[in-house]
Amino acid sequence: MSMNRREFLQLLAIASASGLALNSKTTLAAKQGSTDSFYDLPAYGNVSIMHMTDCHAQLKPIYFREPDVNIGLGSMKGKAPHLVGEQLLKQFNVRPNTMEAHAFTYLNFEKAAKTYGKVGGFAHLSTLVKQVRASRPGSLLLDGGDTWQGSATALWTNGQDMVDACKLLGVDVMTGHWEFTLGAERVKEVIENDFKGKLDFVAQNVKTTDFGDQVFQPYVMKQINGIPVAIVGQAFPYTPIANPRHMVPDWSFGIQDENMQKVVDEARAKGAQVVIVISHNGMDVDLKMASRVTGIDAIMGGHTHDGVPAPSIIKNRTGQTLVTNAGSNGKFLGVLDFDVKGGKIAGFKYKLLPVFSNLIAPDAEMNKLIDSIRAPYEKQLAEKLAITEGTLYRRGNFNGTFDQLILDALMEVKGADAAFSPGFRWGTSLLPGEAITLEHVMDQTAITYPQTTVTEMTGDTIKTIMEDVCDNLFNADPYKQQGGDMVRVGGIQYTCDLTKGFGKRINNMMLNGKALDPNKKYKVAGWAPVGEGVVGEPIFDLVSGYLRSKKVITPRKLNMPKLIGVKGNPGIA
View 1 (cartoon, one colour):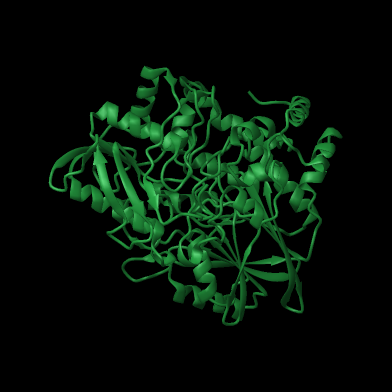
View 2 (cartoon, one colour; view 1 turned 60 degrees about the horizontal axis):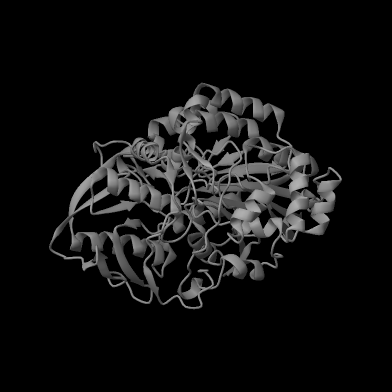
């Protein structure tokens, strides 16, 4: 149930009386019926860029719990984005027990979520975008991708709901990742029809596999207050590996530093005074790219869903590049202002604004569109499958309670010894006592290859799979990381030694109190196969049936590995 503003203010007062400290200035402004205090962002400079990313088709406000495990190793240890909880607050001078602390961390999640309400929602985001634009004429809105996937309506409309919503929101330029799982033809259809003359889709690193031709325009030049600004696209480099290759059979991807440098140089030669990369690399990859490719003023990134309050400033051989990441699920709007003088940047300011739906009036036109999109499906979406007694969430390097629920369902329904669930970072959160609806299940599972499987695997094969995914996450070279989190593992207990290299991290694997036999075969359930032609019950149907049979879901006990080599790491609570 949503609250009106009066109810929200009453709840703020109750929370304050019960000991949850509030930012007094913000609270005072809210009591006066104004949101200007929290969202007051004085104009600066003459080039302004807004940035959203990884909304995963969440049109309505949601709850979203930030991770308590986001480990960085080696040179990445102790640096953004690998900071959680109090360490993140300390690094960015965010006061504890405030709205900002709730937005950026998992701390006091249940209590703070009940106090401050839901986040995101395109109608609320639309109001905020219009407010920023009103103070910054000519500003651009960039979308980092993972927009057309992640909800029931996005799956059922083949992404059309999000295409229409983004056009109305006023997105100017975007790049992609999960968009490609709708298939190459669908992506081209949207760009050539819905987006034509309205929205630019850019990606310098997507080429044809035969002749290496650009599939999309690599960059676009925009004029902001008379200043030429280049927006370069960087799609997710590992799309054909992390997602089904057969959905984009004629396209190649990759990081392509050399081509990025050529594109940046070309844009500069054509007069660009500001160069922005809209990236879906993941933040660690962006940080490395910023140190290698020169001439980029800012990389505004996504993919890893990191809500980072301030830019990382990365030096390279000719200057510096700002690297930002704007979270996920429509929860944040990044605003980057440049002051350009004499063809060069003289200064900048950046603010990552949390989108609190209780503090922002919804835009009427966007609300109307969302209602029309959802109308044919409301009855399905609202079906109550079960009640959760504990918090359900996904984010975290090794597991989340909603992932554990999926694993439990897979093992029971499939009669499997163990289960794997992908380490996806998208998916909304639920509070204790909430009804788990079909919409919530779809928020965790809505993909175009949802088939469930049962496969006989030897213990050695199971270890190999786990080692491979672990290396994708913790390889010392960011260019060999593919983002996402560790595969979620059900039924098997193990240790993970992060001081070791590839093939040596996963040890002491146990199943039902016995050591996993490397030569014995075990039944392993899973979902989201990347191979073509796989047949199986869709994961959303399997989980929905499981929930209907249970009716009440008790708090999940996370199957977490014993971690070695992380003592004192600020990326773990």
